[in-house]
Amino acid sequence: MRNKSKSKKSVMYGLTLLLSAGMVLSGCGSNDNGGNAGTSANGNAATGNATNSEANKPAEEPVELIWYTIGTPQKDVDKVMAEVNKYTSEKIGATVKMNMLDWGDYDQKMKVMTASGEPMDIMFSASWAFDYVQNSRKGAFAQLDELLKNEGKGVADVLDPAFLEGSKVDGHNYGIPANKELPAQEVWRFNKNLLDKYKLDIKGVGSLESLEPLLKTIKESEPTVTPFAMDKNYVPYVPYDYIIQGLPMGVKLDSTDLKVVNVLETPEMTQALQTMRKYYKAGYVSAEAATTTSVSDLQTAGKWFLDRAATQPFADNLWSSSYGYPVVSTPASDSIIYNWSVMGSLQTISANSEHPDKAMAFLNLLNTDSYLRNLVDSGIEGVHYKKTGDNRMENLAESKNYDMPTFSLGNIMLTYLNPSDPDNKWDSFKEFNSAGKPAPTLGFNFDSSKVATELAAVQNVKEEFMSALMTGTVDPAEYVPKAVEKLNAAGFNKIIEEAQSQLDAWKASK
Image 1: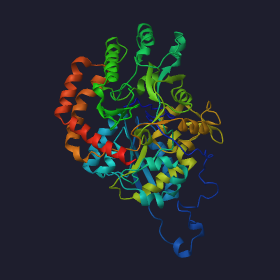
Image 2: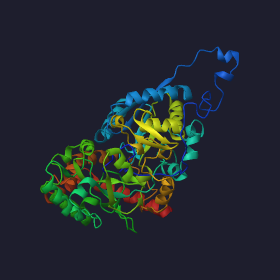
Image 3: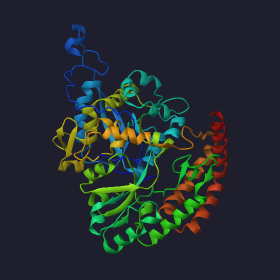
Image 4: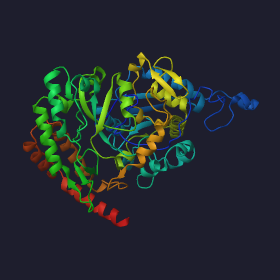
């Protein structure tokens, strides 16, 4: 799992983490939608042009949509949603109640709530959080094919076709991908204030091992700073294409035979875990890393030196703008188009939603309406930010109370540019996307139905060992053999065999 940035204009490990396409930059929207405030979402004239009988009908009460999404809960969410609801109640006859669940808690809490039948309409999902493919197959999400043709027509117009096609599960769409960067590239991010203070050079930085001299300097010179910031979802980068995000089962990126292996037993992961153990013992990693759900407090206070994140064009500008101090980065991996990057950020509609048409109408508006998209993303104009041009903005002091993860919310191509962003930002996204190399299993989605029992048992073992191993909290020489033994006892070998069988059949069909 990647270290997910929580900045307003952040990417995902986000991942995402992670994706993008349609490169038309819309101008600023407004409450009157260009003079058509009386126009409903389907384009029909509103009551100003209605017949007398229609005008005399009682106004339909807006329905409330319950939205669960990922990110550190923000103080001003309800304040912003009140403004959102003034707009959406008129535009589509719906209001929205946003519930944010923190990064480290989202996956488990969503599993519990969906299993218990908690009322909800819209849910964030991804390859790395509340697993999109698996939950689509389990029936957690509504099938969107017809909704996209009707209430969601605008989505197809703004998304690169690769997103909707690449996020199909067994031939059907279950989510609306965020219009963002398509490949995934990991970078080492640095607090530039500390780089400058100690005149540290990052030109030669690339591998995990190359970080050691820099970490040593910060540890010895800055006792209140965490040299290497990470949460419990951190996994050292190794050149493997994971079959299921979060499980150590994958194919090497330069593979031609598509052999599925236990990544814990590979030379690359062995070396990475040894290095992480060395860093942990040296005090470069927080002693609580294996149980930490978020490092946002460190980032807000500037009390970190480096971490790892997924990048996008001009990401350094976005991180710097959000944190209020300069952040710079350097590549930690190649730029690869994975299944998880194509599916790195999606909004889905609950299979149990009582208002799937309204939910789709909202997602359609969120991805096509500049005013709504920037309101949800950046907050209230004049309170959280000020506009400096048709499509430019600057954060105000109150933005600290509404710092949203842009990548998770929809079409980033509608968001306003920050002061340091160039005018050709979205053109640069096109170039970034075109430079990505396809991963060996791109387009393959593992069907776990035949090994569901084993997968559940393996997930329990993963929870027991992975965070402690990956953060260097325990000795890999002692704990990797224990983890492998327990994984195999839980049926991991059977899962690998099933994945290999399906992958071989997929390869033969191409």
